[in-house]
Length: 75
Image (cartoon, rainbow, N blue to C red; front, side, top):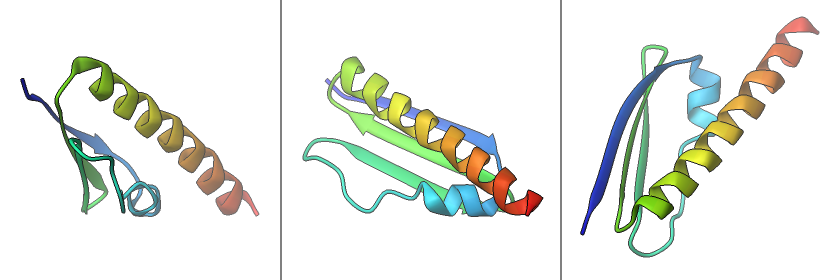
């Protein structure tokens, strides 16, 4: 079985670039592309559980990226 997920999130390019994936485990594909203040995310896995884990990690890192960018802009 293959589980595929695609989404587009409006965000700053700095956050999007920081979330680009440079390595993944065997059997999972995660592609992050930055286009005009939008982040396109494509995830392909073999189980819903691994999709959930990938999304949990992505959103946790996204939240941290937003916090860091806000701090950097405030200084």
